[in-house]
Image 1 (tube, each protein chain N blue to C red):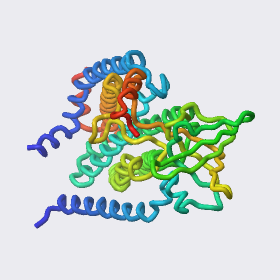
Image 2 (cartoon, helix red, strand yellow):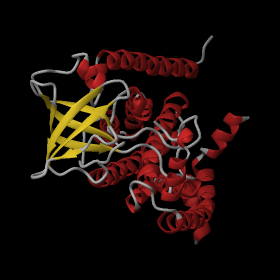
Image 3 (spheres, rainbow over the protein chains, first blue to last red):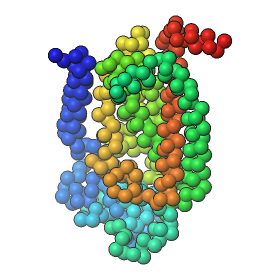
Image 4 (cartoon, rainbow over the protein chains, first blue to last red):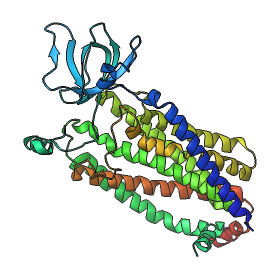
Length: 146
Length: 247
């Protein structure tokens, strides 16, 4: 003989479990739409949309940033450690934009496979440390993150 | 044993008198933690290697975001306790948490936006973390709206508890959004199984601030619960006895 309280508790737990399962499948169905950006590999493999704007995320390859002598146009290479995509952008870059930094660019591929960005956002990582610590980590390449 | 304690603590006269005794201590603790946390965060913590002094907004943003989720869980669980055991104080704790939680959510969104503009280059982006946190704010507002829309407060509490329990599914989504999907928001720094990826001199003030926010929530919650108790039982016998003592 179950008491009314146990019944209520079971009902509530069943309800929460049901909603959790429904949400789980709902999110799985929309998984691709929930991705904020595509990686360079997605673009090379042709998963990224061809005809409309999309966002491309990755790390700026060290030594790849080339500024045009006049104007604000910048060219750089984005990588996801596997594949690379060249990006061209005209405008003011965020303060955190630098080589070796993660960024997200919004734009479109042109006929040559160059990503023409209309907007560039910097993505900072989850590491926080004083400059001295960051400096000493650079001197020990084994501990440096990729 | 545990249930006996719950029943005793949740009897209105007992709760009213013990919360009155706790409040001054909590207030003192709050100012102590807040003072130390703010001094540590704004003065003694070193500047970040990439973000410089701008990163210091973390000392408000992250504790506020943690509180927004913590308070939601408290609200849902106490709502659930109210549903099952029909304890009046649990219902009151649940609804009293809603507006405090909504404030912390709003604070997390605003400070995040202020942080996002200089660092990312955008006030707002529709990535999974930001969107799910915004959904949390709407859940809180829904709870407050629903509660105020129903005349009988005990019925309202039950309706609200179900809404709060349904919304609990959003809490793991917020927490894991940065792992499950590509987001502009960075991954977890402190709340992960690995060693926190923040320097210890920056971490301690952050944890102290998180403690200060928790104590603030306790204070605000007790004050709101006391008001709500008096409002719900204006003719309670224990209130008359309390007034006798004051005279």
